[in-house]
Length: 117
Image 1 (cartoon, one colour):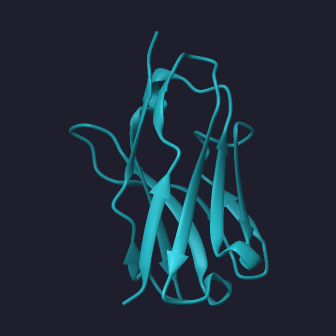
Image 2 (cartoon, rainbow, N blue to C red; image 1 turned 90 degrees about the horizontal axis):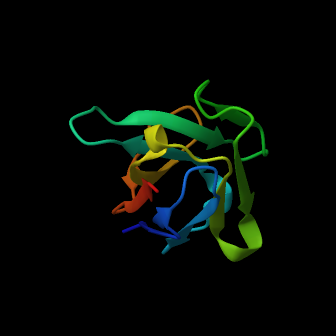
């Protein structure tokens, strides 16, 4: 069974930065389109960013220019660099893996990001 494990969440002040990581095991990340989603309290899970197997990226409007998604296939790891964070970014962040052309089939357990002074 493919497993995804996120790390890097935490408490940060407004305007600060965090880098999330997502490592995949029992498979090769190279065959998956990878993504980040988030879910704030009392809200539905929403799309944040995705990166294709070829490295093409796509972002939600709310994070464009502040977040950067990347992947290092040799490390079986995907990253989300988050800059200029604000309170609206507070959520549990989940990574996902999808075979090309399919919906995400695998999810991580989530990592909490809290932006607060």
